[in-house]
Image (tube, rainbow over all chains, first blue to last red; front, side, top):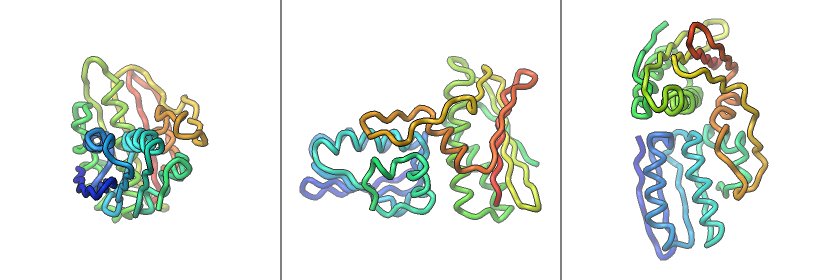
Length: 99
Length: 135
């Protein structure tokens, strides 16, 4: 299960994720990104209430990073211990801006 | 020991996760280990759902066993699909820049690194993949 709360302010889109970012739910995030990415400069993904992320979720983050690094910025905030470790194991902490 | 046999589909990942979590909660499994096991289920059951029987469908069995001294959870995934040993695959390069990154193989790598043991065997027409997490 995944809930995504959207806030659009000027050219910054913040998506607050709640639940799990996995095989079942990653397409929801992908849909949101596809819908908004062309019109924004900055993307903030707030993971304060995200429990965990699997490789299906990493795939969507990577796709988002590739687009946003060309047109502005993307950052991931408030990651929990489990997700921080997943970023470290996979080297995603070097690819993403994690705050 | 408890087990669940269910059609191996992406839609059933959540049901498998709930089933395993119910067993883990009885063991007072720490939340962190529970989330790591949930990721492992998404990767492993997800792989079975995508590839084991494609383009047909089939069932998979998920078994949860507990060990004492030291406390550990052992989860076994069994399917009768095409033989596939995920451990035979080389680990992905995790140092590449975003532009050159590929996601293939990352899921299994993640499971290998977050579980304490992982083993595979093909026996009697079955893929038997086992993960162990110390609690």
